[in-house]
Length: 68
Image 1: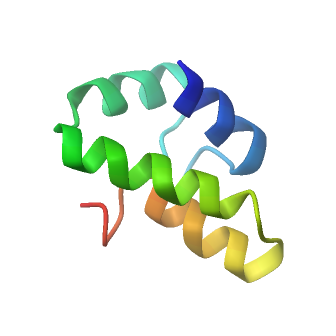
Image 2: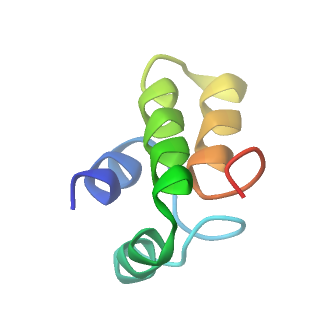
């Protein structure tokens, strides 16, 4: 799944994030389409930043607000 590939490359699993790739795939598959669009957007935004800004978008990409 492209989303989990991007998430794994930019963000880290654990904490608010999924525990591993299998969790990422299961979570993403369970999201409604609007939530999928939101997390995809934020993982894309994470790729354009480093440090705290990347971490913020990774949290959103993990499904936290505003993608909850």
